[in-house]
Structure formats: C-alpha cells, structure tokens
Amino acid sequence: MLWKEVSAMSARIEFLELARLPGANVSQLALRFGISRKTAYKWLGRDRAGESISNRSRKPTSSPGRTSAEVEELVRTLREQYPAWGGRKLHALLKQSPGVKPPSASTITEILRRHGQLDGPRARQPRDWQRFEHPVPNDLWQMDFKGHFAFADGRRCHPLTVLDDHNRYSLGLVPGVDERTETVQKALRRIFTRHGLPAKMLMDHGPPWGDPSFTRLTV
Image (cartoon, rainbow, N blue to C red):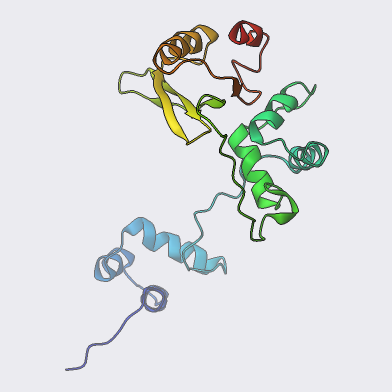
C-alpha cells in the first residue's frame, strides 16, 4: 500500500472543499482533520472573504521601540563630525540635545555598524599590524568598566578592569557594586599597593572619569 503524502496546505484545501458541501458538519470535519473548531471556522471565514488560508506571519506590523529614521540620521551625522567617537560618547552627546530621546549606547553602535560607519572607510579592508605595547611596566594603564550583569538577588555587578599596556597583564578585575568615584578609588588603592603607581592612565569619557569628579580621581 502506498502512503499518500499530504502537506498542510493540501489538507486545508481538502477540508474547505468538504466544508463547502451542503449539510457539511464542520465539527466532525475538524475532528477528522485534527484541528480545533475555532481553527476550522477561521479557515472558513478567510475562504469566504477571499483571503489566503496560508499561515500569516507573526512578525509585528510595527516596532514601537525602533529608533526613528530622524534619530538614526542624527547619529550618522554626529559620527561624521566625530569619527573617533563610539556609541557611549555619542549617546552622552545626544542626551544634551533638546527634544531628542537618544537610543542606548549599544543601539547607537549597532546603527553605526549597520551603515558601515563603525570603523571608518577601512572597515572591510585588511589592517596593518600595529604594536601598542609600552616599553616598560607601569608606563601606561588602561581602566574601564566592562558592562554589568544582575545577581539573583536583584543587585548588579559592575566589573572594573585595569590592564598594563606593556604586556596586557590584568592588574585588577574588581566586582564593583556601582560605577561611582569612591568605588574606583577604593579598588585603585589596592591595585597601587600591590603593583605600584603608573606613569599614565588611559580611560574613555564615560562615568565616573568623564564627569566633574575626574579631578578627584586624578589626584
């Protein structure tokens, strides 16, 4: 005996052909085809309205949270004015623009990536190898907060990282409870005690080293 191969669409067509017959019992047909009465009447309704009976896309017809075209264009314009600035700096700049609700820093980064502006005109070209190592330890340190994540109790962890640019040695990976100046000072005191003082330190313009308390951190 040969098995008859039935697709979902052909089964729906067969169901509708039988359901159109005079005196057809829709409930029994639904049971026969393994569908609910609600689905059966939905297909019948679409068929009578001349609509397609194929599965409709579940993709939303609108995206309320999507960044508007005007804001995307503003992000691209600012990137052209400040080609070395990334998502965090552009986000801080947009917050100062009246009447503009800036997207998150990560969304701004994605906008730049989508439009090929993230790495400038050489984004897709092979790059020459560049060495950035400083000649001796403690010549230049880099410091940054690497995002944050939630604990089970609802608190958040803000990892503070400190690297030595001589050999990329991790001088500190500190699980901070926030990104405040006092938290950074406390972590740096421990790192200074263990490894000494650097000649220079490199940070971005984000908080807390990009706010007015930067002078306190410098001291």
